Image (cartoon, rainbow, N blue to C red; front, side):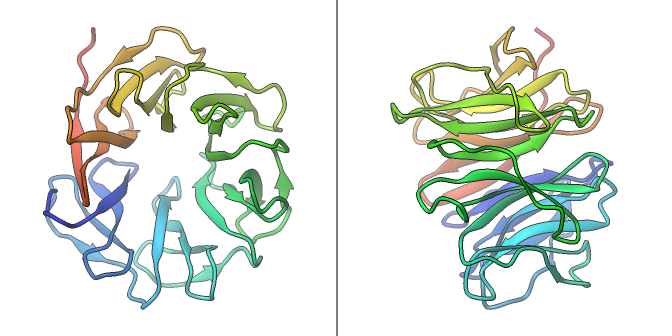
Length: 265
């Protein structure tokens, strides 16, 4: 999917790999859409004069978590996959963004500035918006947090004092953070493979944002996309089972949705 001047961002595979959830500004505001994996049957599932963005499927694809500013500031909402049954999960004057379901569908990880207006931290909540737990407490910005498939680890992005970003992993309770990438370059948007053995992320280590893959322990780095300016690649995620990678390729104000299957090298 590529349309000049339109941003189609944050694509998410359905569990069976047949549908893609994404956000688009084609109507002037961010709204949520689904489509078939081949780009056909595009359906708009939010219809509101506010923004709806940062979506994520529940593990069974029956629910969608997302962010909206429809009540005056960015909050986390959950709805049915067809757009019905809207429920507001958070209620705080701070920014609440980047919701991600746990693989068992019982929890959400999200980022909030509620305890520090200058820094996002990682929080965990159940799907009723209760049992809230803060998992990080640092001066740095921590975002894009995702549970591992077995629920024991959390992958996330950490902004460092030198202005760079690195990919980290920590225990599910927030303890023992480990830097997986440890470079002075900018990195972002990490995601687990379905078996929890690999991590896909975007990096500027070669001067331009491209996609890279590492093992979950930070070893065996390899580059899997090779965008050249003015294009760059970001916001990737694996399909369940077959190794296909869904990602954004961007040039200026245009963001497209693409699929690739890396080699086995």
